[in-house]
Each structure stands twice: as structure tokens, then as C-alpha cells.
Image 1 (cartoon, rainbow, N blue to C red):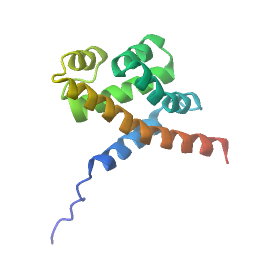
Image 2 (cartoon, rainbow, N blue to C red; image 1 turned 30 degrees about the vertical axis):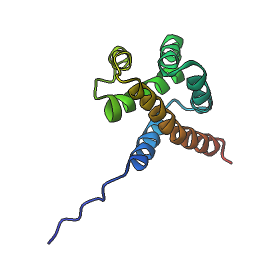
Image 3 (cartoon, helix red, strand yellow; image 1 turned 135 degrees about the vertical axis):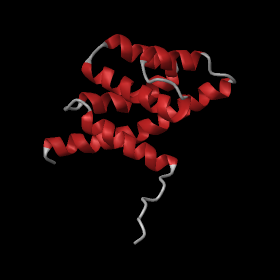
Length: 129
């Protein structure tokens, strides 16, 4: 009997799967979703590294969770480094050519699209709507 294999997931499907896992393990309540909703604007205005540093500095549960989720995705799927704060920041500092940093920013925004959508849906479900 042939073993059935799961079809390979494309990048967007992997993003969605990862985002779902992030939202499921994120702190309950609307803070994580609100933060995820505001994150793209913060990244576009201040840059990816500044945003990650801001989340790290805040030290609040939802900030830490979103920062950890973004770092893990970038480290695993794009940077090829450990997912700790210092390792990801170092990899971003050393990104060469500059297009690599730009691509990391685009990747963070892409995974945030899925996180935002799932977090908003989870918030509605938690409210019982």
C-alpha cells in the first residue's frame, strides 16, 4: 500500500499555518490583535529593527508575544539564524545587500497580514459574535 504524503505547502500557506499557531498561543484578549493591526504601520514608519526593539523594550505580554512570533518566523524562514532577539537583530544588521533587509521587512509584513486576520477572527469568536 502506498503511503499518502501531505502536499507541499507554498510560502503563503506556510505563513498562514504559522500565523494560526501564533494566534492560538497568543495571550487572550484584544491587545494582541490590536497590536498586530498596528504593526505594519509602525514597521513602515520606523523600520523593522526599530519596531522589534520597541516591542522588546515594552516588556508587556502581548508585545513580547508578537515580537517573538515575528522573530521566530524571520529567523526560521528567512534569516537562517537563532530566533532570539540578539541573533535576529545581528542578522538584520549584517544583511547584505540592502535588498536582504528590505526582503525581511516584506516578509514580516506578509506574515503579519495573516496574524492580523486570524487575531481579528479570534477576537470576534471570544466575544461570542
